[in-house]
Image 1: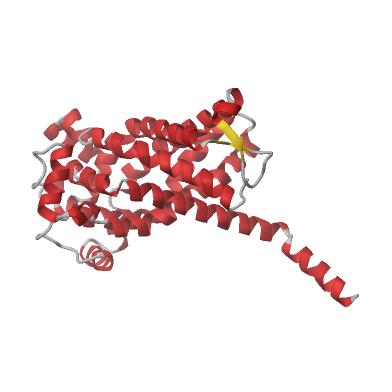
Image 2: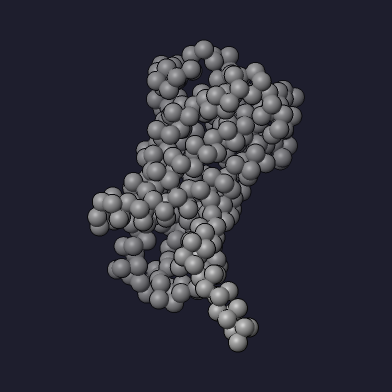
Length: 321
């Protein structure tokens, strides 16, 4: 009798809504982090090249995308293409985890507050999720950009911890880690918003009009339909391309501000508007604000495709459906 009562009490304790909610969000956090790490690992070399081109590194500023890839490999070796990737992984797990988890949370919250317009839910929730993730992980992005911008033989930072120490002691303490935050937040709102909006809209439309061709039952819940792998990759790639096209000039501005302290023209890149004007005046729109965009298409399409597809897969593995 006592044994049965104990088991019953234990089951009741485990099934409390608070416990279930905590466990659900923990699994969602892990799913988002794993998805983002997988996505960034596939395009780490392209990320390094993008940073070198965006900030007009003196060793590679005269080269195109492919020429820069070969030049980095010749000058710094294969591992040179992955410089800064350690800091990226440290940053991207919490970034992706917070972003995907926050998107689910914000979408549910907004749907309760403003009605049944799914399109508005997706756009607003995506924007808010991206901003939330950026604010929490921006110092790590700053350090990763500094490490990736270094060229062999001209190292200013010896690693992640050393970079944190130097920035903190020589660039004004904690505020030094948030240089370029405003253009990042301004750029992240449309990027994350349109990224999630496009993927979710394509997913919903595809499953509604062509469920047999594009969809399949979820592994953890046969009543829920999910996209097949090829369809998920396609939707994620399209979402990434659209989002990057809209927000790219602000991404360039963010990088210039992050790297301003180690660039010769640092005094001209102190604010978002000042940096935008300077880059546009000195290098023009195509070669300044959109420099490296072709590379960004090459990197953002597979990145977003892998991110969304892996997240959908992890949701099934962790029984989130």
